[in-house]
Image 1 (cartoon, rainbow, N blue to C red):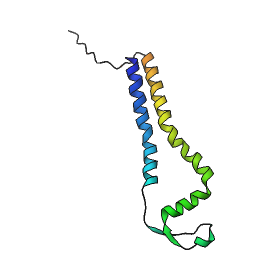
Image 2 (cartoon, one colour; image 1 turned 30 degrees about the horizontal axis):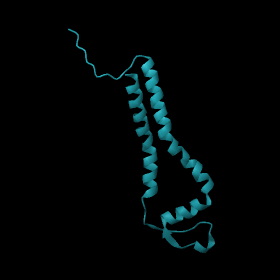
Image 3 (cartoon, one colour; image 1 turned 60 degrees about the vertical axis):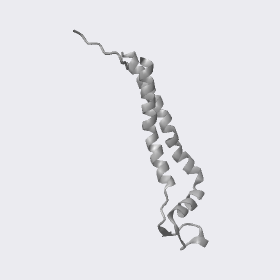
Image 4 (spheres, helix red, strand yellow; image 1 turned 90 degrees about the horizontal axis):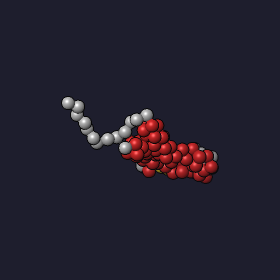
Length: 107
């Protein structure tokens, strides 16, 4: 019965951990078609009207090294929360908590 508790908390932790990753990916994949004027460091494009995504991709191409490390934690959060949920299930199991289907009625 303790194994059921561990599995349930592991899955719950994994699902909770997917929330920030999903939020980030939805924001990354949606498009914004509003035009903005480029004012970055690349001189030939200075003052040109373009989409906000293109400006972001131009700026990200120069900051590629730091971007990978700053978003890496989003992919580790589901694993960490799943492990935390499993650890919580193990600890609760040691204290006598269990998921059961048996219902006893004392008369």
